[in-house]
Amino acid sequence: MWRLITYTEQYTPITPYKSTYAIGIVEDENGNRLVVRIDSKYFGRLRTGMVGSVYEEWSIFGSFKKFVPEGVEEPAKVALVTGSARGIGAAIALELAKAGYTVVVSDLTYDESAEKTLQEIKAAGGSAIFVAIDVSSRESVERAVKEVAEKLGRIDVLVNSAEITRDAYLQRMSAEDWDAVIKVNLTGASNCAKAVAPYMIRQGGGVIVNISSIVGMVGNVGQTNYAASKAGLIGLTYSLAKELAPYGIRVVAIAPGFVRTRMTLAVPKSILRDYLRRIPIARLIEPTEVAKLVKHVVENEAINGVVIPIDLGLTISSPKA
Ligand code: NAD
Image 1 (spheres, helix red, strand yellow):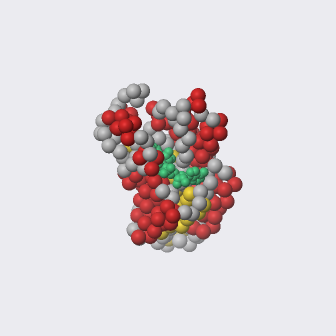
Image 2 (cartoon, rainbow, N blue to C red):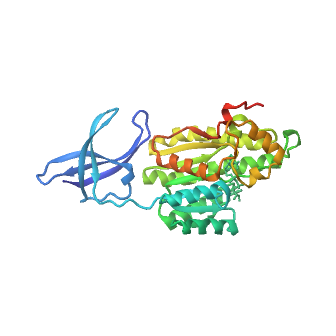
């Protein structure tokens, strides 16, 4: 049995030593002392005097002694899902709540859909609050993220799902419609990531999931603004994953094909049928299927800096057709 005598939390942003962990000194009952490394997941919960075990662990810089404190309760993790009053965002909020996360359902305003999502989470035995956020406004995002941190104490997961569409051929698209889509879908995601990152860094880690789209990979007629915003999210994901990895924060994009939502069902039937004919498995994806993938990404610590399509094989069909 080893007792923690002293420790310090470390952030080392310099290549090749990039890492986030605590260094401590522990002592056993005979007065033997060891210098140990402690996982960043214990940040904010380490106390001198706490007891635990020491293990030998391997790293690329050689083996080291790792201290694992005993009896440290895992705090309820918090997931913030933007644009989650309805649609895919709501399904993600419900899935994460079922997985034990305290969920922040957030959208422009608290309406019937937001109320319904909160009720569904409560009925499933989950825990959730609503916080209004306009992702396109930096002030709104910063205020709301501060509110979440004050109310729930931490932010472990951010899912950027808020979106708008303003479809038109580029020749006929107004400058306002171009700007509006980029501002919500792309700048909005960057605003939210920027606001939550300091909290995740202090906690020793987190996960950011950007909901991109297959349209950002293969394009779509009448959706230059939307496709550009979704392709932009992919670049944001790759770059931010590199920037935040030293702090234990993973950043991943998901690129769904056509999901059964208001947006998809509003597409004229003949056009939808034409789209579906080109997909190897010719059906719509269910919002719950996207939500399950998000949950997997959040829980699987090996997934980082990638775009994961969930598209029934759409990308292997003829994208330019
Ligand atoms: P949706 O339009 O049903 O929901 C989007 C939500 O975002 C709405 O509740 C809306 O109020 C909210 N929102 C809009 N502007 C906002 C702002 N400024 N601040 C905060 N919230 C705002 O969308 P959906 O179909 O459920 O899609 C969810 C995500 O999945 C989006 O990012 C979308 O691009 C992506 N996606 C959807 C499909 C699809 O087939 N539906 C396919 C691929 C990707």
